Length: 418
Image 1 (tube, helix red, strand yellow):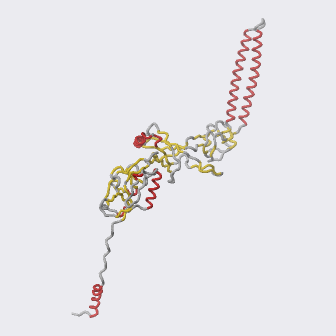
Image 2 (tube, one colour; image 1 turned 135 degrees about the horizontal axis):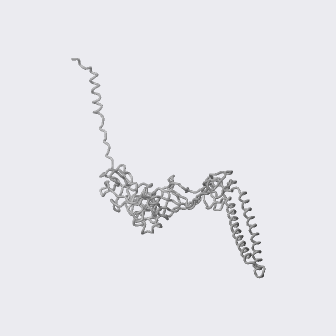
Image 3 (cartoon, one colour; image 1 turned 180 degrees about the vertical axis):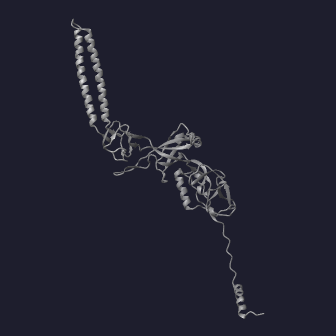
């Protein structure tokens, strides 16, 4: 049996000696409980809000049409501009109508001359009746001729008025204030009552906002606001398609008297101001709301209501519903199932599962597990700033309800949300 070389045994021994000579490394210290931001569930004012899809509609809309048949001579407005009631929009060919009016007036003059002669004849026959030369039949014929001519003069006067009306129709005026659309017929074409709409004018200020609401929601809204003044208890806000909340507020003023059977909804309508933003020489008057525009309608209560609320960021959801984590007396996280009421994007109103004073974890939730020890502290300045802004929107909370968060951070009342 061949013996191993001496150098091989030395190589095998070196790792053992090296390992045995290494000092024992220190084990890492166990990590402490995760830090979390905590606020106390407290009574706060919140503006109740409901969202619906709606559409902006002009309060007045007029389709401008021709009332007579004539060639179009002029267009006197800029397409897309705003016009005032009474402004001249189109001028039609006037010559044929002026000639017709002159002919009708001449016919009146002729008939009036015949009537004047008939009146003289009637007076003469009446005078002759007093003498032996007078005849009753002649007098009766004179009276009948006079009355016939009087009727013909009245008919001719009516024809003059008709011709004057037709002549006036050659000037087409704006019937309302509003923004005018493009023209459908250009200068030089023949227009008539059967040629269709020349252009359309839609009023600009105020505007309607209409939105369908399910019957169930209508009943809930009625029960919610009936005792607070009905229509006057809510205001309408509008979120534009770009996500911006329109600065003006509107009032609810109409509810349809029937239910749309195909959708089981009732149409509600509000009126909202649409003032001019600016006026330019080229683009005319610019306004925020446009007829036919799709918007999100926010139906809000005028007065805030007091609710038990927590920041919306504290609410988590799974297949079983909504829940939050609260810090128990032993500084361990506990999962609480909650039921939400009317909420905003930043504040959640809780109607079940929490009580006033519960310490709710709002930050650091990704590191929290049920039963895990945590290190509670105040929320971040950013969250506190958001809550302060909500306080201003809702009008502030009673001093007694401004409970501090764990670690001394003040929890703020919530305001109106989207």
